[in-house]
Length: 227
Image (tube, rainbow, N blue to C red; front, side):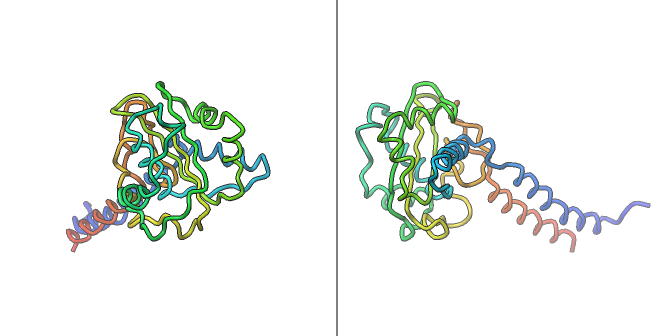
């Protein structure tokens, strides 16, 4: 005998969020080149007896904004930096990071190349002299944010790593679960997004936080129809 429509709707309402959450969990950081770079950096630090750093999504998003400040100019990477005021006036608002939670940037690594480098190749580009090694292994860092982005759908490709000495639980706090730039071109670390990489200027896909929101909405709609 067929099951009545109302119990079916109730069952669907209960199962759908679980399925969506499973999909969100599957979209971990293994396919995000920015997270892969953070993993390489932490492995290098721990191998050198330095502490592992907390991967902060707010700081990662700001690293993506930091890249955009160069407007595709590779030649500026080594010699120029965006004004310090950009963090509070441009980068944080663009990401939805609470300005009051910004912490001191204790170091940065920047690299740019015409062809897209893999995370291990990017690591070698970013850390290529004694000064870079000193930044990498500094004891002043407590957290990290990394990003990678192409330019206008192609090269040059920029990698940026920002280090901070803030408290991981309270610094670079994001309004809501997902930084504002989560649907813009490029990848950034710390938010458990499955990001295919910027080889063709692809957008970062829907994050786990966004999927949870979709699940909640669909759950409410299904329950309404079931009543």
